[in-house]
Each structure stands twice: as C-alpha cells, then as structure tokens.
Length: 299
Image (cartoon, rainbow, N blue to C red; front, side, top):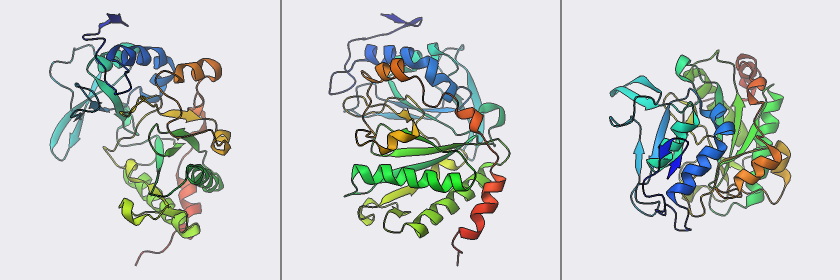
C-alpha cells in the first residue's frame, strides 16, 4: 500500500486498541500535512514510536536512525552528551514516512533549525490534577490568556489530545531560551499568586488537590511539545487540535475531543485555527518589563 510515495508495510496492523491501523495513521498524516507542516517545518523532532502498538513498549527517539533515507531533512544539535541529529519534517512525504515507522507522535522544539537558540514559541502547558473538572481547565486557559494579553502578548489555545490544553504565544526571535524560560517561570508564579486555589507549580499529581499545573518546562533548550495535529498514543487516537479562543467557553470542547477519524472533517469545515499565528509574533522584552513588578520575590 502506497501513501504519498511511501510503501506502508503491514498496513492492517492495529496500532491502537480501538482498531486504528498503521495505514489509517499514514493516511491521516498525509491528509493534514497541508495544515500541520507550517507548525513543524524547520523544527527538530523527537519521535514517539510504537512498533507493536500503543499497548506495547514504545520508543522515544531523539536521534535520527542510520537507516532513515537521505532525502529526509535533519539538523545536528550540540548537547551535553555530544552531537545529536534530529529529523525535520518539511514535507508530507516525511510525515508519512514517520507513520510508516510507527511514529504516532512527533514532538517539536519551540525553535527552528536556522536559529536553534532563539525560540519562536512560548508554551504554557496546563495539566489538571486529580479532581479537577473539565470546565476548570478551560477556565484556567482563559485566565492565562487574560494575563498574557495584559502583558501585550497574543495567546493561542490548543487541545492537547491528552488531559489538558496548551496556551502558546508566538514570539519574534529576539530572546534566547534562558530569557524565555525565565519569563515563563515568572508567569507561572504570577498565576499561582493571583489564583492560588486554581493554579499550582507542584509537579507531583498527588499534591495538586484539584488544581491545574502550570508546566513551563517546555521552554528550555532541547525541550519539546506536541505540535498541532499530532496524534496521541491513546485509545481512539485523539489529536492535538488548535482552537479558536472562544471554544474555551464551550462545554463541548474537551482536550481529546477530536480524533484521527474526525479531525479531518473539522479541518474541511473550519480550516486551521492557527493559520495566522505567525502574524501575531511579538518581542518578549516589553512583556518581561510589565510582568517584573508582579512576579513574587525569591528568597
């Protein structure tokens, strides 16, 4: 079976307990390539692969395997453990090839290969703790957006396909990762200080008591996040789905609402909610100065 010029081996192999096959995955990534590629093009990827399906042992692959064909784009990154060469998905054929390798979820850097040290995305990952209600997480995302707008930044929301939402800010590439991470950390502290009953920075789930974790750790060099339209390794094959901001006020909006078999219909009817995200990119400097007086002092 051929998809986008890639021969799919074992096309009927079920990768999900709900029956979605490798061929379904390949065809999905081919169908969404037009809207997904602008969000991943040029970005180093880490590959979350499940050769025997999501109920078996998976592989989280940072480095591109030697057997990957030469036509796949890549970038070599210098790390504390030596050089690491990552896949870059710049075309539909690469997305389908990754599906053929049972890569269910590619995870993307918040920076691009031409300026690896300068992120163009700030990512606030909102993860509900035990006892948090779906409406609480949507309300939390709206509150994060309110603070970001007050700081002069433009927030974009995404249902992650898992349990929470990402609030993403497009940035002009003027600050390095240290500056962006410091801003994200201060933002998290301001959120907890302003809404202590709603937000927490506590990583341990048992300590969250129904609060929403403000996870800002996706803003460091080498950190990754699930990109728009990626499939998640969960039953039903839910997908990360960019939202129109007003959808955060809709009770029908859930983090895992759209799936491999239903998201293409949404796209056909509504298009990419983040199609213009790049036009809202702004420098972070002014927002940092506005946030500084509100950030709690560190002892």
